Image (cartoon, rainbow, N blue to C red; front, side):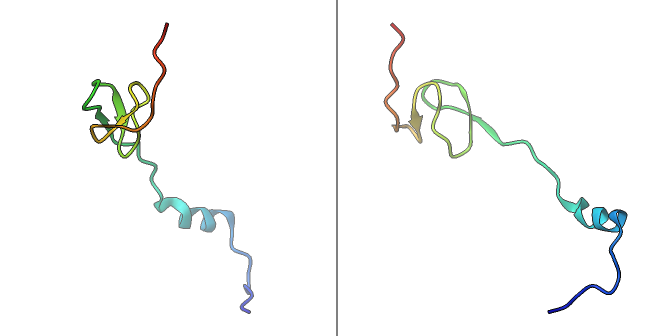
Length: 61
């Protein structure tokens, strides 16, 4: 197995890791209730996904 001949400095190590950029998630509106939802997620308000009921939500009494 290969072993490093010299220690890589913190600066050099951190330079290598700078290419990652965090992006905020893409949001869309729910087709059923109009709430803001992440892509490919069930709506937390109504429980619909792609126009179909995915999760049965209890109504507030």
